[in-house]
Image 1: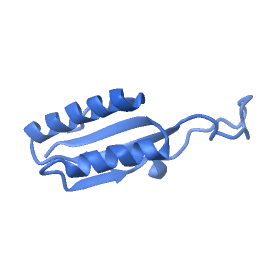
Image 2: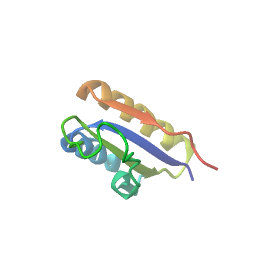
Image 3: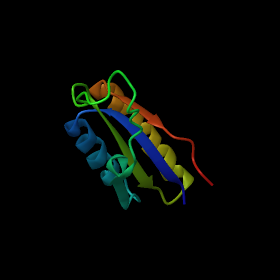
Image 4: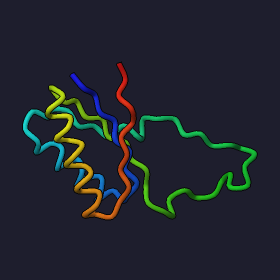
Length: 97
């Protein structure tokens, strides 16, 4: 069962649009926003330490379980099309074995 991880650089509304789209694809049962579960790599000695990081678009990561390769390819195509329509960046992390 392919596990797809998709990084989306956009607003919370953009994230909801992607999640809704993915849940509407037949065979997809699990779509989860996991970016907030990931530790942040903040450098205390950086010149930007302590500055707000909410001035630009957010970085979100979705985890999607696809039942087979065919459905995983449909997910990729749908995500690419929606990213173009919304004007946001979406990238897929390499699949893990």
